[in-house]
Image (cartoon, rainbow, N blue to C red; front, side):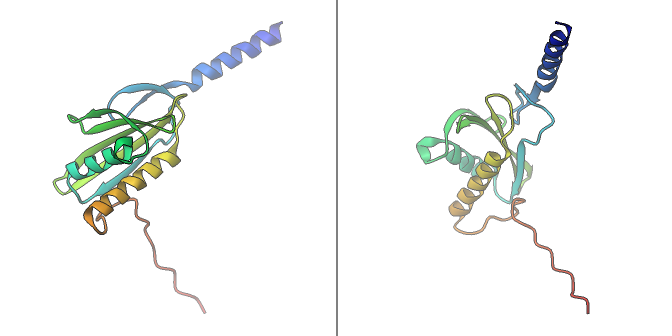
Length: 154
């Protein structure tokens, strides 16, 4: 009986200690597992409005997007959507007059992260911006950085 009580107490401690409160990119609080990477940050040399519209088109199903747009906040330029039964939070902010930052955060219903879906949404936004510009998108931090190979030794 004592072992069962200690086991039950240990389980309760793990459940309560593993759960917590996280801050979403739009400034709200939600239940979730803290201390896990759940955001992708990208920067573009475009206006805030262009990036916001592209993010909205990617998330909104009525515009051929990936999910259902649940909330649009024009005050702090944030979007909340539901994609594949996951909550997607996107915030667009101006770093400089010509540089815009976009933060994509994804959480499951249980509060776990889905960094792969966040990366996919970030990539879809970049592709939408590229097709809207008719060419390459400048200043993206999601572009791979290549380094030259070291010279061969003889």
